[in-house]
Length: 119
Image 1 (cartoon, rainbow, N blue to C red):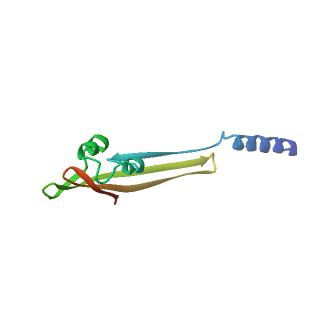
Image 2: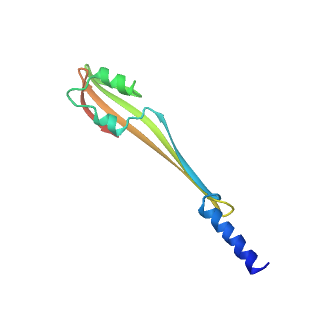
């Protein structure tokens, strides 16, 4: 093969790599269960937010525990799966999956929120 032809093939290959024709990747995030975002959790005011608002905003909890009459602990649990991958045509292909569990707790007394936290 001539030097001119090799340079031409090299230039075309480099051009295709730099324009993204042969390189790709992506990622997805999937949540299952009762996910509560940080911004939603920040909107809950202890001593003011009611049980009705919690149900309307977050839905029914994963678990309800009655600590004593009028005093409840609600638990919202979720699982988050993040998948990512990428490839360089004929050179490399790979991916990664990360799974994380999360929990938000809401404690109420007499239908008013007294405390919230992430577990």
